[in-house]
Image (tube, rainbow, N blue to C red; front, side, top):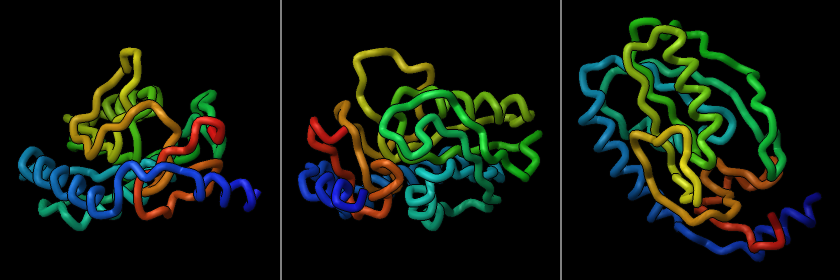
Length: 182
């Protein structure tokens, strides 16, 4: 497996370097700070992919907030999505709260929509979503993110929380796999 990971890493295209991603996070934080000022939000990190983006974004936010996490995934360390699997729901009561859901990527939108719907079902008064990457697809998505760092073409990505078969989330940039790798 490590040989495959190394091959993917060595042949990938760098789409956004670390400085570009950090600048995108700065812009997202400015927008979020303006929009959510005074709302006492629950900052909800989508595990595992959202860890890096959420952590990098969190220190840029200026409003008082509480932090929690949620884990609903269609990928389970694979490169193709399947059935949505819930493994963690927030411990923080969402009733009457504003929620900011933070994830790595908005791909087909199925997972993010399910998470936003769950937050609303729990009685959140407002639910916003922030994604580091919004992937452009040829089809309509069931949800749009409120805050987006960067947009990319429809390729398999890794880095800044996004993975290739459970690896490469820690890459300091956003990379696209070569066509034959994903």
